[in-house]
Amino acid sequence: MIPNGVPAIVSQELFDRVQERMAANKKAPAKHKAEDEYLLTTKLFCGKCKSMMAGESGTSRNETTYRYYKCPGVKYHRGCDKKTVKKLWIEDYVIEQIRKIIFDDELIEYLADTVLEIQGKDNTVIPLLQQQLEETEKGIENMLNAIQQGIITPSTKQRMDELESRKSELLVQIGKEKMARPMLIKDQIVFWFHRFRKLDTNKLEHRRRLIDSFVNVIFLYDDKMIITFNYKDGTKIITFSDLEKSELSSDINSLGEPTQNRIGKLKTAFLCGFFYLNSILFY
Image (cartoon, rainbow, N blue to C red; front, side, top):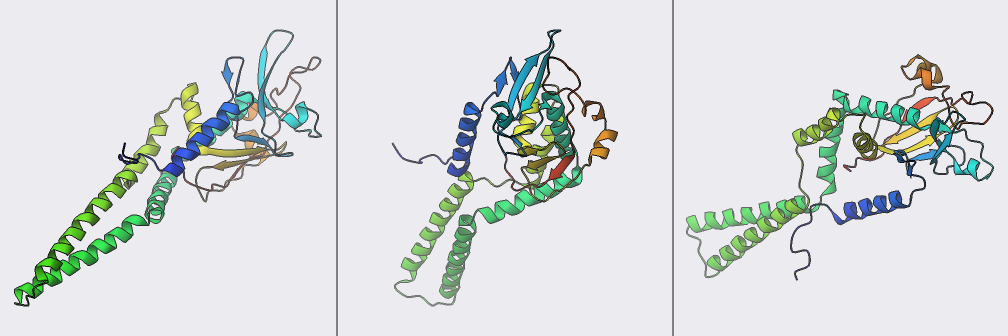
């Protein structure tokens, strides 16, 4: 057995992060309930007590099932009074914000440039190897110039062999490093983003891919929602009045958790949108 005999497709750090995410999702409370998936589980937090909100469901007297997210601080009477939020409404709204990102050509260009910049800064090994290669090639060229001028010593051939051997070693090391951490070109990055435009937001698997790829964390208050996406430098604020004018306005006062006496009268009010994006991650 040869340890690390084949270069890894992804870095050990990224592999470990994915394993942590998978473990968190596996342990997440109420991710699957009543044969339905709560897509914002592990990402949606109560803005008041900072607890992870969990999926809940309830059935009214006419056998209608309602699904929503609820703060455990409310459920277990821990002093939080955060209102519940209708599952479909908040998931639809988050999906809509993601679509605005992936259909914004200027933003995609900016993100692609940022990825290229980060790639260049992230790998410090290849630039060092390339610098050493340039110095070695310069040494070979100097030796050849000396030979052409008739400056030949007993150690000339030995030195040339050493430089040629060093050049071969550096080329192999650079090749291995590139295989282990392949560099993407801008067209590949833009193409990766454009693939998301073809996803059908009516399909559960496609909705899950969009949320997992773009959403980092959401803090939900009774009057606003703070969304942190997986990229840097993008801020947008949507006031409650702006939301009322949107096509989702009919759901602002929609049902949250059903009650026995007043089904349909529980309001969920939102001020939506503060986008602070902190890192790029191809998930």
